[in-house]
Length: 187
Image 1 (cartoon, rainbow, N blue to C red):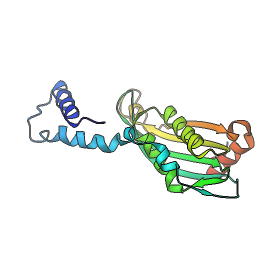
Image 2 (spheres, helix red, strand yellow; image 1 turned 135 degrees about the vertical axis):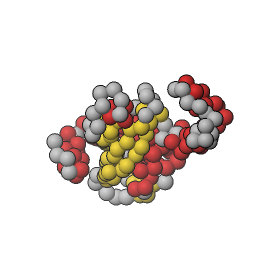
Image 3 (cartoon, rainbow, N blue to C red; image 1 turned 30 degrees about the vertical axis):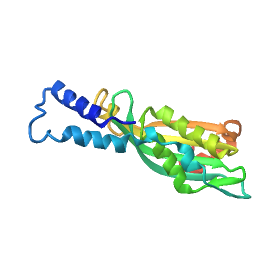
Image 4 (cartoon, rainbow, N blue to C red; image 1 turned 90 degrees about the vertical axis):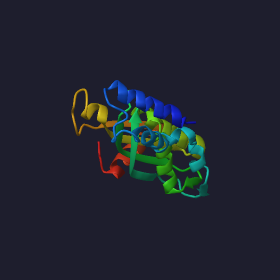
């Protein structure tokens, strides 16, 4: 659970630490604004992906389901800077599917935490496998990291791509190839 007062105190100390006057007009309300913003940005800490993946529908088909280009925003745990991009998810149903919006909500649960992209990708795939129990799942995440673009090496536009394969996608290369063809990325 977030502690609003601790966040405000930390922001005041940070502002003082970089040489700012926390009593000047433009900064007076900044600690409170940032504390409220943290509720939005890091609300995934208090959420459980199983809530979104629990409601399923029976199906006879076991054809691949893909939800692509799911936008997300997250925060790198190393520099507390944003990274953002798109997630692409596919799974092979084993008698049940989930509402498509639930896949996007699952991405949000994990993205709204201090995070590493590699970890985010695996967490999404693991949640699908655990709570939906499909025959297989694959998750690809493409993101731009502000720690790479506005500091350090300063390479705007560079993208990091991560992939997590579970179940049938680990053992059947043709499924993975089909996933990439359906995304339109080829390989």
